[in-house]
Amino acid sequence: MPFFFSPLFLVLALPGLLLGLFAQARVKGAFSKYSKVRTQRGVTGAQVARMLLDAQGLYDVVIEQSKGRLSDHYDPRSKTLRLSPDVYNTPSVAAAGVAAHETGHALQDAKSYAPLMVRSALVPAASFGSSLAPLIFFAGLMLEGFAGFGIEVAWIGVILFGAAVLFTLVTLPVEFDASNRAKRLLKSQGILIGNESEGVDKVLNAAALTYVAAAVAAIGQLLYYVMILLGGRRD
Image (cartoon, rainbow, N blue to C red; front, side, top):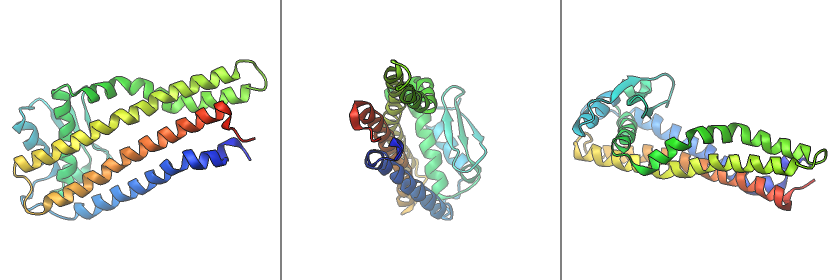
């Protein structure tokens, strides 16, 4: 049995992957459900974001419509908040929650929130590590029988992948804090009425689980690599 299908993989890496699938299903389910629940104030996601940004004095942050479903994000380089069509144009509870969450990231940027600054600095290393580190790791294992430096190459791959793992860990406080800011802002500005906040909580909590799943999966994969190099490999 190839080592990447070994019991070690099932124990360390598979749980995170399964949690990720579960989290994605929860996000889609919660967003789909509360996208059909119209807010009593009838404001779209774009209007919610603008109201919250202006209330915090962030008049320079631009709001744009992006392409694709759930493609919402805040770009700190251009000070632009991009919302997917389902959020930008829809006066729903789900849209209000997502728009407020992304506004939370804009507030983090404005206040130089330390975890956000660290995550932004890690982006290049994390992108390189997540895409090339596994290839370097497996190349090192293949070289093991032909060259004396194969294990060293594999360890380089592990170290690079560690940057991607660190990125997922730093992402957790960034995303949790953005959601907490979103909930406080929606409440303080009186945008939600009655039990609408419960729907926002479910949407944002489901989204938070995806980041937890990503961290668990990354840690499991890193441990799998390390265990192989420390003698856990199954031939």
